[in-house]
Image (cartoon, rainbow, N blue to C red; front, side, top):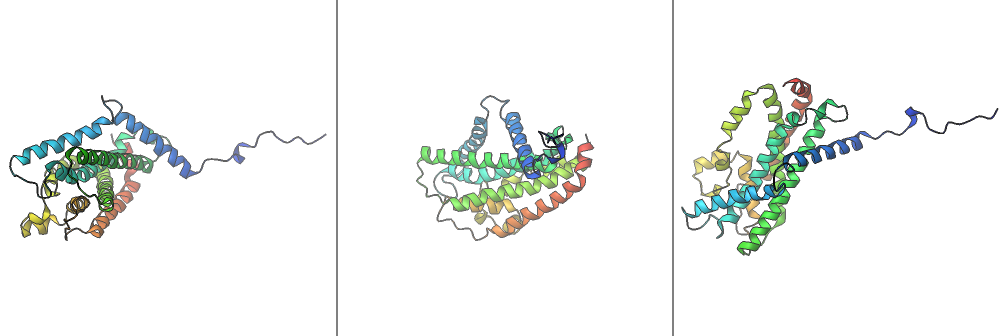
Amino acid sequence: MPLQLPLTAPQSARPRPTRSFASFRAISALMLREMATQYGRSPGGYLWALLEPLGVIVVMAAAFSLLVRTPPLGNNFILFYATGFMPFLLYMNVSNVIARCIDFSRPLLQYPAVTWVDAMLARLFLNTLTGVLVTFVLITTLLVVTDTRVLIELPPALIAMCLAALVGAGIGTMNCVLFGLFPVWSQIWGILTRPLVLASGVIFLFDGLPPVVQHILWYNPLIHITGLMRTGFYPTYRPDYVSIVYVAIIGVLLLFFGILLLGRYHRELLNNR
């Protein structure tokens, strides 16, 4: 009797998708889910991601133009505040969404194919790309409409945005653990960070502050990020206080310890409701 070979390979012999490909699919699905949740349910969708920061910048420019005649740099209030506010907004958005990535993706994290790393990376990628895109569109529009004739240096601006996302990811991962283990920390953190926009150089220059205040605010990594961002739009502005290495170390250390804590406590965070 002739030997008959099976037409299909056994189940164990079939190729299975690698973990990296499975993570890519999970991250992509989570990004699409967040896009639909964050932007798809509101009128205008992605348009609000552009209109919201533009409205804040215009209001700030109009308010401070009544107090002083010229901005600390250049001659355009809107551009000055935009170069400080956009990296600050990117930091705030990234840190806030990552701090709540476990709660946001809790139903999907019950499936073995989706991990807390996928949930964190999905929110990091989506909000970073959105922040960079909105910043590019907004500032380009301002340059065309206001006719400021600014010579832009892209490398400092891109580095500043990447550092803002890095610090935001580090703060977000740490707060993701702390918010879950100690719910009261969410309220405490909200109180502590209310004056952050004032302490990050968004509406003023670090160089114009008294030395005592400079010594304190220098340890705020956001003050370095806003100063670096403005060097890409004001060629004559060269802040000596900016330290890219310091900001990168702070961001990497926060992210490292935040990931360690999430790896240790993510099961407890999933069970806490």
